Image (cartoon, rainbow, N blue to C red):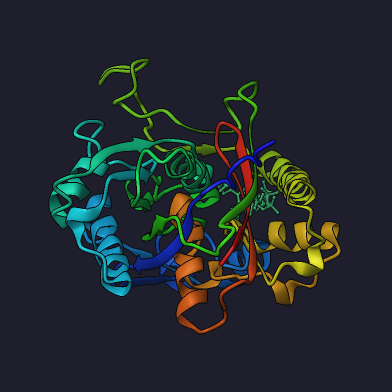
Length: 329
Ligand code: ACO
């Protein structure tokens, strides 16, 4: 009997990132709300974050990250078949941020849509893209995670404003001969607790200009913390098992960068040394769906990734949503 053909899934062929130039330190925030560098660092690990200019939008940052990925990969924008943008801070509900980016980078042939899974958006988008490539429908897909969270943060609320930052990361996916690409994934959601992490934007269908009083991120910090640790741990372990891998075979764990204590707790539960975890939240804070692609890009650019290395991406976000992905570099 003929053997089934091997799955021709997606590999990352290039990456890019963009961070706005303005650095806002914890001391800067202490001039705006009652907080301190000591409180923020000890509770979260965050030292500073980047904040976009007033006239710099999610698609501007996403387009710059995408352009870098195109340049580094030597890929022409016209060869992109599909653009998926993971974001919870779109420039506009429609046109989608993906359409804005399509225009800005000249990806004239590409289909384009946004995907919303809060901080888990980038992983949801990567796994969605992989299905299109494995089915043979598309050859080249641009996946962007981009956020201007500063536009949905209440700068008078010390409980939340110290946590977030702006930025964008991008990857280009293609099938690469000889690479196993994405070995296994795990995605999940639990919509039963909509209030622990939410944004009641004036553009959602439940709201209008009269009913929205605070279109800002709302968060029950302790509950989010507790659930993030357990969901990320469970998701990563299930994903490793599916991939048939032991944690010691993974060169880099790239977690969502919400809080150093969350990452530390996940590493501890998995029995993995923190040395194998990529951490950049000290410099950028939580950039939601941009965290993982920026961390991937920085790891690649610093020469810490070789062909054949296994990487585990793991995330948790509003919804609540979570996901993990094991991929071969
Ligand atoms: N500066 C000084 N004091 C503060 C600040 C601040 N920025 N923020 C809160 N406090 C105060 C509180 O008002 C409270 O004071 P009180 O005891 O007088 O009421 C005190 O500090 C303790 O507050 P807690 O909420 O108990 O602090 P906790 O140790 O839980 O840390 C934190 C809060 C950092 C938000 C933590 O719960 C956490 O990390 N949660 C995870 C949530 C997260 O990371 N969300 C990001 C978005 S979700 C995602 O991306 C997964």
